[in-house]
Image (cartoon, rainbow, N blue to C red; front, side):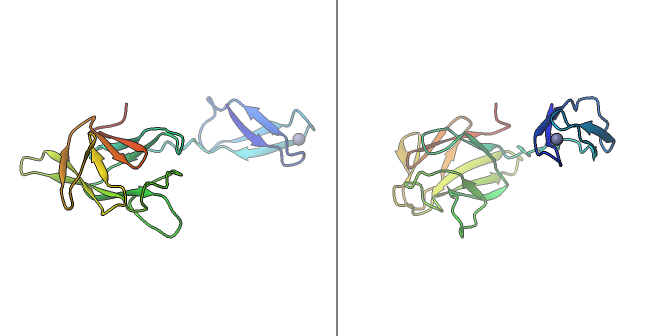
Length: 164
Ligand SMILES: [Zn+2]
């Protein structure tokens, strides 16, 4: 089902979209005011995320909802999303103990083509923890599937493939 707003009375109209061909025009009649109008039917965009290099699952807490952030080969900078700070992997959260640039997840490939994940703290105020152990300055800690990274009050889980 989809909903659309009536152009005349602005009531929402629900309609069944499962059998409509993408790109087809359909006529809809408003239940509320009787207005008939046509719309061109756009297919639902299925966003295909690429999980070749795994992803970070941000666990829901009082500061944020659950998020899944795909990883890219190279450096992935994680931190709290803030206007004016552009990073590759921002997290939507009100957790102010998370820095705007908090840690880097490095995704590397070895000679055999194996993908290796490492976490490095980005000189954050409260530090970056892997499995409850604080990372030392400049330390790059190898992490594997299911391991937990803690940034402030927020828990991140590495998935080496697609999320569950
Ligand atoms: Zn209407």
